[in-house]
Image (cartoon, rainbow, N blue to C red; front, top):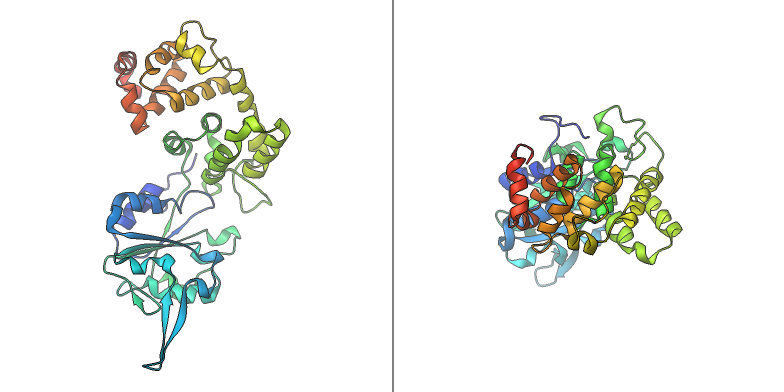
Length: 357
């Protein structure tokens, strides 16, 4: 589980709060790969809404012509720079600009973007941003060997904040609201150290995570777990077992893929949702912890106002720890929580177990 190093790292939510509440500052969010730094753009858009325009710019893939192009003003015999429309300067609104992977950009690209980092009158070419505009940068840690560099005079214009990797509980709270495959959620619940960070220390033997000291291909991160869920596992009915495993290995690494593959088999052994909701007192119960985890997280994804009560009858036949996992994770989902509390069975269970909710 990721260490909570007070004052040295921040969570994704804390990073978003810094940007929202200190809009005139220029933040550089650094952290290991795949932890969700770019997703902060969504949090900003949710907070500010239509008051702002939003511009995401992938600096690592950019050339100078992707930023602005010179235009000749023959009447005044001068040249001007016209900004690329991607920066939304033409919107007539203040803009939130994310310079993603700024530290991987070629030096000429960094130089051309540099005026955006000024606290007063940030500009792009000849275009001064509207008052209230927000500019932030993201990148990986310099010591990770991913080619991240930034000059001292740039660092002196920004506030560098290290964003930590979400731990398993934080990631699961996000996953239950973002349609992640139950197999993936169940696996993370059973293997929480897959969400540890190499910066925690004592993780040299962890086979799942990114570690800059090791030669490795794919590894577990929030980003790769989402890819494994949505782009691989949810298509498994169309794939051979061999193709499914190969794709998972190429997405989350061999150790994680082989361990998670067992959870796919657990799901295939479970009773159907119809069996559970139509005959909750008779439907077969899962036996192994992995199968219980797949059952619980799959139920959170499927539950609705018509099935919450029969499923509560079913889950109350399971061990108390799995009842708690179901109820706690259901309560973390804003939509599913409302469904839960329409059920007398769920409310009664919650009242009897209020100490763990």
